[in-house]
Length: 98
Image 1 (cartoon, rainbow, N blue to C red):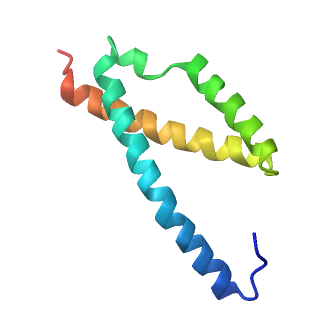
Image 2 (tube, helix red, strand yellow; image 1 turned 30 degrees about the horizontal axis):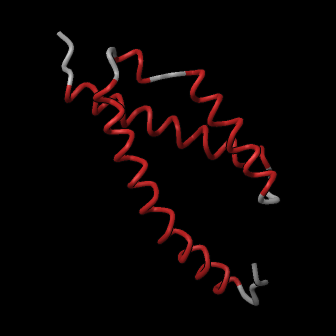
């Protein structure tokens, strides 16, 4: 990663990365939406074992990339929580309970 010469350059690069990240988040949301259809119960939307599996995997990826694993874990836990809320909403829409 080249060193930026100004705050404006830092911001331009962050904006460039956001243009790549948001489409990936949209794609991930599409898969989360599909997952809701495979869940037998609303309780199945939250899978603690799967969450911990993801966290362990991304922490290792962070280390491989020379990034702080605690930062990656915090980001992913926040993202997963947001996707859980989204999936629960989708689940209620496609499988209304009572």
